[in-house]
Length: 298
Image (cartoon, rainbow, N blue to C red; front, side, top):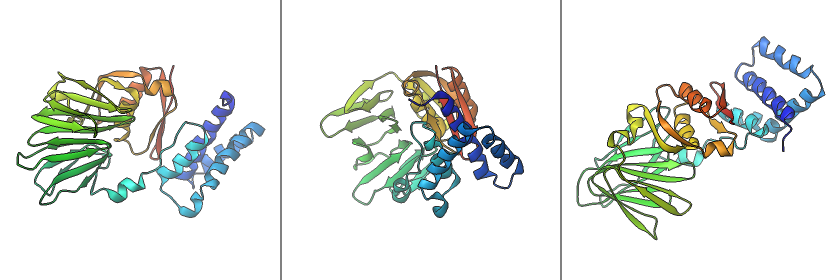
């Protein structure tokens, strides 16, 4: 187990190092670094660990983006995991949403709305209406027709003829919710049929189906709202993360699994994240533009 005092020094060293990365010509940050190192051997050991982690990546030679630099540093301070840009997703995707939702006209004439931080492959052609949601959340308004419209969502196949529905990547599974019509979902072994207001949550090869969900609250991110109704803390944080320029790191596994009920303003993701954290006795440390770190939790 990490010594709490050493952990605190690592966090302090990482904070200074992040600011050095973003403001290399700021004399005040250099003075703060020198003062930190001058406090004693413990501080110098913490600083050395941060530098070792940075140098081990060869990051100076590769000159990566600042978000990646920050992730390297934070990985060294034992925050559980660090974000690395998913290059595979970026290489494969036909459509990528940045920090705001994106409306996409598919080649078939159907419409896909992607939440911030989402990625989609459009495999449709003259014979098939077929897309893959690689990351994030997508809302699909499907034009009625003879050809089924299929969304591949991890191990799930989600099919519809003429309907509207949301598909979502969770931190540990997948979710499908229907606003109109009927949708068939299959994992290859089992199939489920969902109607308007129905939701299927699929995790660990098991599915839980529920009904009666308010239509206006489904894919509410299209109205810049996040409606959590017994949603995992980690999934709420992930949805807010997609609206932020950096990466949200949860350092408490139990906190990630806590259930959250409430509505959050996606136009103000960082204040919403602070409210979420504070309600569970946690705190948010922000080092924009590179990264946002969520620490602690009772």
